[in-house]
Length: 224
Length: 345
Image (cartoon, rainbow over all chains, first blue to last red; front, side):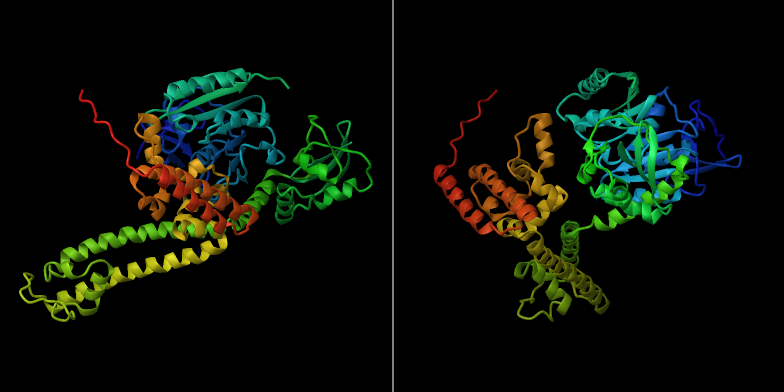
């Protein structure tokens, strides 16, 4: 029996080593993670090697605006590993999960059927106009897409972000340029975001959980 | 006047006021059908009804230009689902319907072909593994058999006859192997049988790929062979993807490891990926292979595009061009390059 206490970030719990979220669908383990009961609540272990957001939390993430009723646009949801934890965090909110590739999307749809706050959208994040009629402006945009033009795709999707909303970008240096030093790539991404009028609140490399990845959090400065 | 379509209905909006609305039926199936029409750039019934008597109106999405709207980039306050008796859980149910419908349609012949390619690779690996074990095992009884036969025939002989005395027309006198007890004999025969089945399944899969490739990509399979063609489709992630690739990418499909080693560590760049399996390449002398691979990949790219877009059969002409180009290459680079001796450091 482990002692599970609040971690400090809203909705995130810890036993001192592992971090947890409260399982929205008790009994369900999404990707083989451990379920841990404590004082009548079931928690799901959040594996930093499988989820970049968990890695970011363990690396000391400070900006964490996930509230129970937040709406989140998740780009590149894949099979829903990280998206399921976000679904735990925003239990009465909504997670719009955008994914284009059919194999992971099959699993994602099955997951969405079990979680009332997850909405699957089979679309290409390059073209937000194909799904903007489905998505209200959201509180949080979270993007984890291994594409060369990650930053461009990210910026395009920010038109769906509320004013003052928060956006997370998980940068995969290897997808942008394999031959360059990842730090050079990180700097150029941050520069690109700033030039587009964003304020970069914090950023953190995700080593040793994810090699050659960085998490960036920004808020939009634009007034429209 | 603006025509705006949301996931729950179509609206005519003037000066931020909704003038007229046609809501979708509050049913996940009905909404899913409409959302799919929108994704496919078609009109939904409600839109047609709303603009029937309108002469001029503005639209915010390019799709609606098709029913006569004038495109505008105005930012408009969108109707809220809650104001019209809809909630998000209906959107979710409808989106799950849309997803299921899309997924069912997303599977094509090329998906089956690429799974079959993977299955062949699995069977080759399995066959080698089992074959190694069978040799080691049967060598206890009759090590000399390896000298007479090899490959698929080896397993077939053991599966059919078992002990060395029963195998026809093979000299077994003086074998250094030990006697085989009846129980051991039967076990080995069963095991050998499994190996022959693996090999025959592999052949069946090859026939399956050949038959499917003829319909799916006749040019590609005529030019590169059905199996290599199928491998290219599998590596590209579908015929549509292959058709979009530049020939330089096709040339190196399957050589990603060597390519990235080249980019990152500056080793020699690879000259060919899976197309190396074609006799054009592996039978060519090494110093011509780079040239041949480049030319070959160029024609493969054209073949794949013809297969995906025009669906015309042009491979005969491509093949003639290709042979001509190869002749040139052979003539031009007849002799192996003279290598300068490496200077000692």
